[in-house]
Image (cartoon, rainbow, N blue to C red):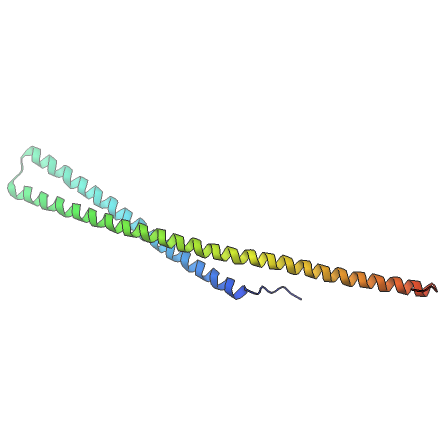
Length: 153
């Protein structure tokens, strides 16, 4: 008789949910990394434009150019703030997905532990049954030997 885990279908379902949770976590982490990259690019662009603005101010700048830089720097700062807000949302989502993945992993490990315990119980029960059969066969053999020698069992 082969061991059959009584909660096998539940274990398979939980493993499926774990794989889905891992995929969702990976997607959220990838999005967060992309936003971090965008944030770094926005910071570099703002620094570059600020430096150019300072250089042109030292050399003397016209009113039109001054207004252009002020508008451009304001736009870059807004983009930086929006990107930072998106990063905060993405970080929250990554943490939420990580927690869901950990919960799924814990559930799978619990079921695997139950399976291991059940498998060991099954193995021990089979070993007891086998030993019982061997003991019975030994008793029967001893009786036959006693009868063959002419004695009483």
